[in-house]
Image 1 (cartoon, rainbow, N blue to C red):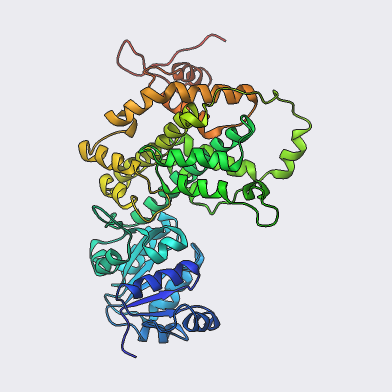
Image 2 (image 1 turned 90 degrees about the vertical axis):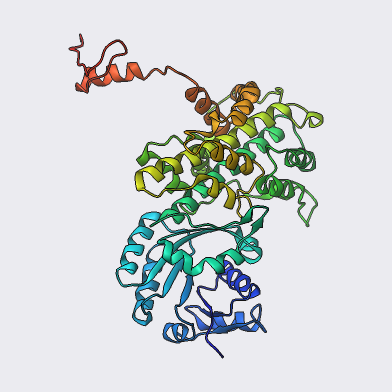
Length: 472
């Protein structure tokens, strides 16, 4: 066979679907997997009669690629990526390009870009979102590295990406590890929205006693609105409608309430703390997953720690799409996006990434897990003010907050009185109330810090730095 345009290492589900996507879009491919049996199964199955060939080892793999070689690695983040890079490097030549399509830590990608570029190889750290279906049909892709390296794959990724009205859902993100940082923050926003929808479900079930179908009908109404129309609301409706084939009951009620995580939510929160960005809604969603993992402790504590009896309160009705609960959901989703975008803005400054915020919103409009109609509003907000400090002060978003804040407060207060945890709703309310407060009580914190540690403070009535010998 002739030399292939594109190479893939790692035939997991995502890898298989991405190479099928590339082949469908006119790029002949060669694939390699650590176990050749997996490669054979793919070539005899989903890859049969496609313009895809297999390789028995890495030397064979590299030899079947046209130059300059473009190689996508879909392997587990961390040491596995370094191992593949080390194993490939002896066979590469100047101008060849490696692409890490996994969820790598952006610090690792920064290191790899420098390491590979020093050898005259290219390296792209590319976040890929959309799950298995997106990988096959068109994902959102977030490539970062040198501009020259991106230009070498631009024609490929433009065809592979999801397409929306204003172009493909891929763009050059920026230098170094910027692509993986943007994907990490994407996943943090995703954590937030998933937990927000779970809290809405929990209140409808526990307070109103609604069935799966009744809740799904509400989600269907939400998905018809500009504010909440999104992939995650859409699939939440699907999950709530799905019945157990054995007994016809709501399948979601048979699923253990312990959520997994793969680290990107944690990386989002850690990065935010390091850079001084406030992401309480996203942090609350991460902590909710951690708390869910403590199932045995929670079951034991349920009989020991007594709280209020769950009581009915006003969440709205299906006729008004559960209006107060919808208010809480809309504002919490806005907060999740706002916190993610603020983190990216701060990181762009700190790391000299020069991120273009409207373009990030644009490539998230299709293919990815957090795709939503709201992203058009986010795109417009940053087009109108490229230096926008926070989405909440954009006129359209500010109007949403001013209109819906009473509903969010009503839901949080009612949940507190009923003893039902709503960590994202509660954190969002605190976030908005803190952000709109011109004065916060940290003047007392500064006084205490100076009292016990002579840390000094500033005054509101005069310039300078001050210390007081506080009376004990």
